[in-house]
Image (tube, rainbow, N blue to C red; front, side):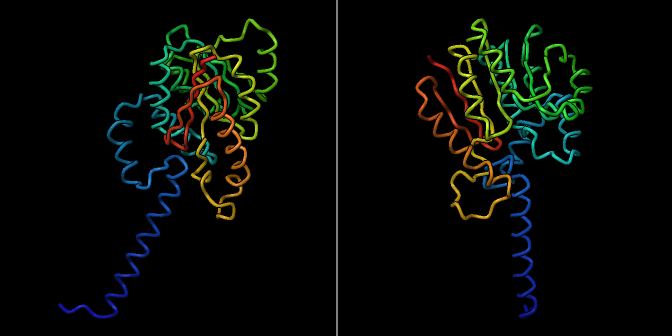
Length: 258
């Protein structure tokens, strides 16, 4: 059958619309995946993440997906990464700054030994309590010491007592980006030599390499400079070894060496 000009136009229009649709889908996934292909990211999730995801984490992920601020959650592949990392470093005494509904917190709690501890801080208890019943059902709530409010005053108290210096095996930060530098100044004293600090969102939606005039969501633009400042500071800090990974929205792993 012959192809008419109208058919060709329709096909071209359909292809453009399909491409635009794919781009939009990638933007939705993109805040938690920097891969250029959504299909590749989905392959990772379906091949190695979802089949191994504990039932409690799956339940919390699905509950969180219904929350209006679900963009704040840790991605499933990053949760899996954190869980394995904690086991690899044999962490026991840990800290988390920025909890939201507790997906990364649950990943940590499940990885810790029965007597492991997490000092967890967030300004919003209501979000944490959304996930708390699932954490309790998983049998790990006793490992968590949740503190509602800003983290800096708590960190200042900890740093003031030298007995706390070098006592944390693992610390994960996924909170207000404009305070990341302030957190680092305190956490470097609290993590032990050989211990690990993980800073989330260090590639910040890919905006770290975007031109200043590039179109960005307001919150992405606002925090971009703070993320860039942190990345430069970590790269120049002789007290740590670092590894920046394109997992989720970018995570920088810092191992204290002095």
